[in-house]
Length: 347
Image (cartoon, rainbow, N blue to C red; front, side, top):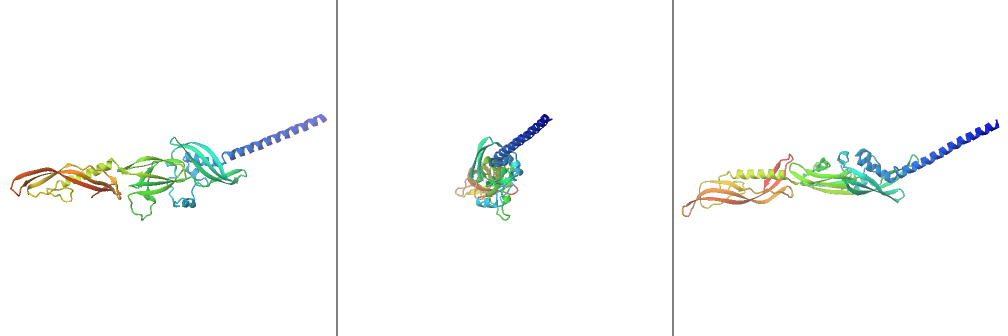
């Protein structure tokens, strides 16, 4: 009986020892897991990684929900920006691919304040960006929580020369949409927008009359990124103005007088006119347009009208025919009406 009792006690001790060992292993494993999570997922770099991953998959709600992503009024004021910057571009549909995201460094500048640097590719081009984050304590008693000390969002300032519309990553915007209701119409316009950074924004202007070449603008900092969209007359615009100028000159040529009214050409003949003058256009002035102060302008450009008219000399009565080219010059101011039609003013 004694032998059996010892065996039972030994068996119980072995069981207890096994439980203790398992418990210790579980505690060690839990500690290692917590340490690993704090080093990775709940580290400063892991926090920034969450933001970058959300941007990469166009999860704008997830990115904006992270603490400190939306800039405060104080941050905007410090940057010299209005507190009501439009959030029009904070949408997934205008985000471009963000690839090869990798942590470069995590530097603690002071207790709880970290500068985290990440590298990535935008349109296959390498780039990097620094982020500033601050520890805000722990949750669940063990995990570190963070927030962006400075918002990672950037500001895109778009100057649209000679127009107000521009297209960014397929979305067309009107810079005047955020102007004051009583703001006067202007030839060139400007607007600033909050944007996700890092990201690549392809900006252009392409309408029926004006074109600006596409620009690829990387935003890889929280500073204001400036871009100018230079909308210039395209071939269709030039062609339409040329057609209107030619039509105007042809109408002038139908006037059977030496000085067609409100027209850029005419001739003075001191002799007696016999019959009626006949005008035609020998060379139409070629239209060229460049931006001026308030509209597009064509400088004085030469053309040639042609006149045929019979005359009688006041000196000796001889009859002759004046059949010759008459040079002239014409300058224009050309605007675009709200309905998209062109308005031409002779200079």
